[in-house]
Image (cartoon, rainbow over all chains, first blue to last red; front, side, top):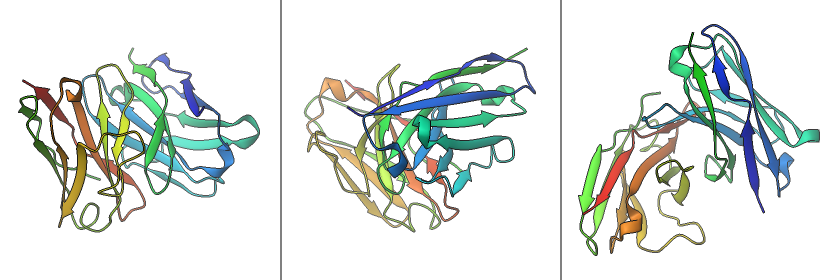
Length: 118
Length: 110
């Protein structure tokens, strides 16, 4: 069955970096675009970034552009997001999700919590 | 990339119907038929309920339906059930090749 499992969250100081991973299984990873979506505690969903099925196209929310980098490793069936210059407002549960077609997020992981605090 | 506008809360009694609106602009909701709706129960991951404005994924009850008029999309839930109580989010593709979510609507089943 289709599964995406996030990892790498934790507590990090402002200004530092963190890399999240999303391990995919049960489907042909190289055939699907993938997204990162986050949710601050008690708040709504916020779209973060998307990467095309082959990694050639990447798009970001304005709030993370220039600080976050989305990438994928097809050999490892894994999606990543490198988060630099972290701020308190980046504190959130980060979800990865499979794109069925043009932003239809059909499968979501359970999320990994990132807390940015000194 | 401003969030789409949803009512903060809606409520209804079991068996009734409710509608949640999602208002954007001509650069997102109004410009494309790429609006999705997600249901999220507390502590759980979101679940896709409607895609491409009106389509239901396999396994989603036909009590859920979607529509769009101009810059506003809507999710209607008929025959409300206790299990429908959750947060609901709309999302849309945008002209910047990005996506945007609504602020979310808390549905209470009275």
